[in-house]
Image 1 (cartoon, rainbow, N blue to C red):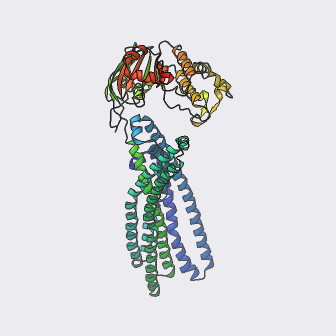
Image 2: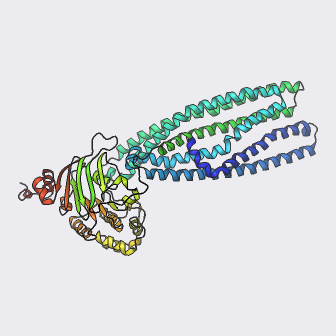
Image 3: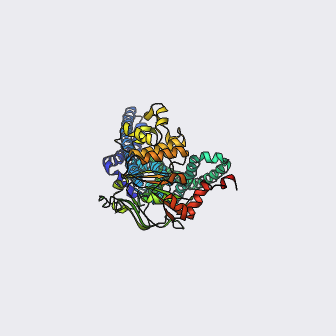
Length: 578
C-alpha cells in the first residue's frame, strides 16, 4: 500500500493543505471549551450580559472560521484523492495491458476487474479520509489533554490513563481486521467470477435449463462472502461500544474529581465543564479515528492487492527497437517448437517443425484440443514457445518489438468480438487511417458488403456491445474485414468462418486469395472443405504434427486426415448408410 502513495506526487500541495486546514479547524475547536468556561465563571457568575454577548460573538467567529477551514480541507482532500485514483487506475490499466496471455490466464479476468473497480474505490476513500482526519483526530486528542493540564494537573491524569487504554483497543481491532478484510476481498473475487461467467453464458445456461443450479452455486458463494463480512464486521463493531464505555467511565471519574475540587475551591465550575467538553471531544475524535482505522484497514488490504498486480511482471521481454526480417521469402518458420502452458499438466505442442513461403496459404486442421489455436498464437507472440524458435521473415519473433511484429499480422480469433460503436469504428481497428473505399473493398471480400449496405446508415450503423444486434455469421465476416483493412503481410483466420455456410465460406476464401499474391494466409478449421485448397495443410493430433502436405498427399498417407475428411465426406456407398 505504501508503494502506491507515489501517485500523490502530483498532488503534494493538496496533500499538504488538506491536513493543514483540518488542524487549523481543530485549533479553533480546542478554544471553544475555554471560551465556554469564561462564560460560566465570569458572565453567568457575575450576571454580566455584555460579557456573555461578547464571548458568544467570539464563539460564532471561531465556528465560522473553523467551518471555512473544514470546507477548504475537504476540497483539497477530495481533489488529491480523486487525482490519486485517476493516476493509479491509468497506470494499473496500462500495466494489465502489458501483461502477456500467460499472466492474464494466471491472475484471472474477474480478479483484475475487482482490482480496477472496487479495490481502487476503497483506496481512494482511504486516502480522502486520511488526509482529512489522520492528523486532525490525534491532534485534538493530544491537544485536549494538553489543555486539560493547563486547567488542572490532577484532573488531567484521567486523560493520561484513558488515552493509552483507548489506543490499545483501537490498534488491537486494527491488527485483527487487516488480514480479515483481505480475505473478504478475495471472496468478492469469487462472487464476481461466478457472476461474470453467468452473464456471459446466460444463453447456454437457459438452453440447458441450469438456472436453479447456477442460482444455488451463486447463493453458496455469496453466503460465504456474507459470513466473512459479518465476522470481520462484528470485530470492527466492538470498537465503538468499548470506546464509549471507556470514555463515559472517564467522564464519570472526571466529574467526581471535579466536584470535589470545586467544593475545595481548587477549580471553578466552568473549568469542570471545560474538562468534560475536552473529554467529549476526545470521545468524538476517537470514534472518528476508530472508523477511520477501519476504513484505512480496508484500503490497506485493497492497496496490497493492487500492488500485487503491479508486481506481476510479464514473462515476455520486448525489444525496444526491432530489425527488419532478413529472409523475405520464408514468411514463417517453426523450428522444432514445443509449448507448455503455465500450470498445465501436459505439453500442448510437441516438436512442431515446418516452414511457410511468402504468399502461400496454409491450412491447419485437427480435432478439438489438438493445438491448432496454440500454433497460430505463437506467430504474433501471444505466448512464447518453451522449446525451439518461431521466426517471421527470417527473424525470431523475440527480436521484434510487439508493435513491429503485430503490424505485419492480421488475426481473426475464434470468438468474434466487436466493440460498441459504428461499423466504421470497428473496421478502423485494423487501420486508423483507412478510408471508406478500403473498408468497402474489405467488406466485399468477406461477403459482408450486401448486409452492411442494407443496414440503416451503412458504415455508420451502430453496433451494440459485443455485436448483440448482429448474427454470428455477420459478426465473423466483420471481424475478418477488420483484419483485411489492415492489409497484413500474414493473415490468420482461426476457425473464423464456423458460422458461415459452405458456399459463403468458399467465396470468402476465393476473394481473400485474390487480394494480394504476397499475403501469407493461415486458415485454422475443423472443416476439410475450408483447407483442401491450401498450398500446404498441417494435420495436428494431440499437439503433434501428424501430417504435412497437400490435400491429395494427405488423403493418401495421413490416417488422421483421412478420418477427418471421410467423417465429413463419406466414401461412395457409406453415404447410403452402409
